[in-house]
Each structure stands twice: as C-alpha cells, then as structure tokens.
Image (tube, rainbow, N blue to C red; front, side, top):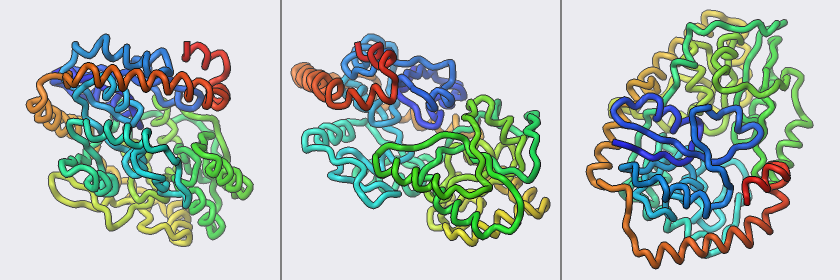
Length: 411
C-alpha cells in the first residue's frame, strides 16, 4: 500500500513514514519558517509555494502513484479536498476542538473566539470535513469532540516516539549546571499552562532553574498581549535558551535533571512522550477523568500532577529536587506506561492495521467527483487567494516570512 501524507504535526507523519514496514508513505508538507524549521526532518518534501492553487496542482501531478491519502491539519485537508482525493483526517491539537466550520469557536485557553469566519468559509470547511472518508482522533478530549460531528469517528491512542533519537542510552552534554535543572522544551504560551507554572514557582522552597526554549505561540493579538504580560512576571528560576533541533533534543533530555511539561491540557504532548523514553522524570498535568486506551483497556497515565493547582505543582517540584528516590520511581513509571502506547513497533502495527481496513473500503485515492463542481471550487479558491491572501494578509505574511522569501513563495 502506498500512502500520500500531506502536512504534519509534532512529527506524527514523519514517524509513520519511518516506522511502518509493510506500506510506503510519502510525506509532503508546507513551507516552514523560523522556529518551525527546528522541528522538521531533512527527509521531507515541501511545497515550493504558499499558494493553494499551486499546492493542489502539485498533488494532482503525483496522486495517481498512491492508494490512499492521510492529512494532518486543515490546510492539508483543504488541498486533498480540492484535489478530489479519498483522504483520512487525523486530528491532533486544536484542529478538532476549535474547528473552522463552527461559528466563532472558543479557544480552550482564551475566553474570546479565536476566529470569526464568514458563512462561505465555514461552509467550505464543513464540506472538507464531511468529505473525509474517515476521521481519527487520539485521546478522550479530541475523540469526544470529534464524535459530535461524525458518527463514524475512530479513536486511536497509539502514537510514535522515535527511539533512535529518544532513549536512555544517549550520551549527555555538559551544560555546566550550577544547580538542579529542569528543561522546558515546549512552546511558551497559555495553552501550555505557563501561568500555572509561574504561580507555582512562587511557592517553591528549593533552589533550581528551568531552561525554557525561546519558542512563542502568538496566533492572535490577545495571545501576544497575554505572553507579553506573562513575560513581565517571569520568575527568577526561568532562564531562556535558544531553540533545540529535534534530532538533538534527546541529548538535552539526558543532560538535565527533570522535564517541565505542560500544565493545562490534561494530557501528554510530544515533548513529554519523547522525554519518557529517555527515562528522565517528567512533570505534566494529567486529567484523571480522561483515560487513554491501551489494548482496549482504559488507563490513567502515571504522570504528575493530578490537578492544575499551583500549590500542588510547587510541592511536586520541591519533592523532585530533593528526592532521588522519588525522581527515579516517577521516571520508571512514566517509561513503563509510555512504551506500551508509544513504542514505534507497537504503534506501527496498530496504525497499519487501521490503514489496511480503510484501504479495503476505498481502493482508489481518487474520489471522482463531478468535474464541473471541482473546477468551480478551485476557481473560487484561486480568486480568494489572489484577492484576500495576497492583498488582505500580505503585510502579516511578509512580517512572518520576510519580504524576499514571501515573494518567492507566492510567485
């Protein structure tokens, strides 16, 4: 089976491509900029344009080489829909909790809506969603939201950790630590719970530092203001360091004493999953009401803390700093749990079994919809990107990409 994967989040598609043995996966993703380049593998094809019309043209040129399409992110699904493919949508992050077809969906972490799309945009994204041959989500939170919109929603909690990069045999680097050191390699923002972490640090009694990578989430003006406000209250324990490339991240996990994970979502992110395989203690808030599913059994991850209470987090931080026995036990429990769900051989088997079942129902990657309908939809999108994307959003995109790179990607 040959699978075309479009888009990626937290290296899910890259790991699928690397570890599935009985299928071939070709990944093509979008141009990346600045911090995003630090997370991208070299073995990935990228679109050479930001223009949707050119991305669709690229997919149309190669699609007949494949049996099925897997998309991550709405941008990827948009391309697959316009190219008239049979595609699977895999949801991670806020892609399903804040779907673009809902009117003024609220962010999980901000009180105000994150966007307010017009009727035609919402209709278009709903068409994209409804035309997926199936939709997959991991974790209780994402699956429950997905079920509201698709009766045929599929839950698959198995994910990948690249054990060639993340394992307990990695040699560490000399960070010249002067005190107990945590590493926080996640994006800095409200969605990761840094307001909770900052509050907890006020109650800590031990001496330590937290190395935080300079990686900021600023999708909206409100988020920019919230981050600016947070940074103005930065505790003395926080020390910012340059971004770390993904293929070097395991070395840094092994070189610090513990990992500071996210404290708001209530579930593990990519950073925490990867770090667990390096057998270092990790602090990450886990919602006790949202178990994971391993071998059809519900299991609560053994990560701590069990609540978002800053005082509980402070007590755990102090305990990690003071007690080697506690650190070692926590790291062991976290690793033993994680290898049952995120070991690449186990995850690859679960994913491949599912993909084979889907492929039996949809033997061709081509949906073969009405040619007139697809031509009309593509013309509308081409018009929209020329008059909205290039003009209305031009200044914002130049700011993000730089004028020269933006012009090159929109020719």
